[in-house]
Image (cartoon, rainbow, N blue to C red; front, side, top):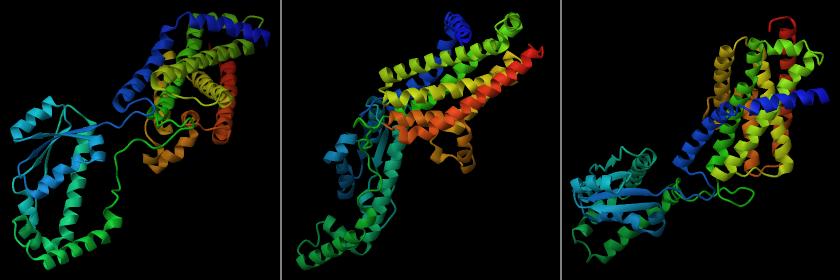
Length: 415
């Protein structure tokens, strides 16, 4: 054991003397995480983005004023900013100057056509310089159009009276007006379960973690990126074994009195230490830059050890199967990316096809980042115990297989 530790310590010092490759591998998932944080917000309690619209009401009728005035209620005003424009040309200018998501144009004759039972159109011009919020504006207009269409059908029999009221007629018929209002109220009440409240609402995230903080989207995304970065780090460090073989230094070490098992074992241990150091660095960066929380140390420490063991074993087994650095880079990069995608590092498992969901449990990425996500949301032993057991079993099998294959190859003179 003392010999193994001494060889591992020597190998670790040599690896740390050249940190550029390590930093480059870690920078890739960090850049991706930073980009996603800028796009979606990366800290707890971050507010939902505000929808900025430019509105041109060419109709100026009662129904168009009703629709335009919906943005003035308190809840809508917290999520939506509406800038008025008198003409289409002015609206296009403000769409650019105000950095709005979309320009909404209510056409002339909107109210009269709708009350006459005709078809009306809301024109939505999306800002091409933005990506997400213009889509929100378009879908919001579609939902609004659907509600207006349903309301018009509900009031179909009373549209003539409503047209008269708009034109200033029929106000002296108190009995008829009261009867119409009763019918309208009855139809609205009958559809209350369908129309109200809306199925989709815009609001603050309500999910809370163990510390009582708001939902952090990076707590879902960052662990998957982190596991992918750790796997690339393990591949880079394990590739050093082939470099030593090609340079002849590995052959000389294997011929030394310490024995092949100690030499090869020290290589794997030093790679595990580099992966562990990378894990600590990425956790620290996630905490500082993205507000990540990693749960109780009593759960996090053994989980981290299981993750490091599984990743190191996988890299050792892969480089025991390839024969050149180029093969290791090509095969390793492709396999890690596929495992990350299938394992759910980038896409929620619920949206994947059934055959991919069934293959997730065969990837260590799934078990690793799902456990880290669970811990970041406050999960304990009862939530990640199975993950630790699976990762530990995978790591043990991978390390044993890697050592066996490496020993057989190099002792048979293939080095």
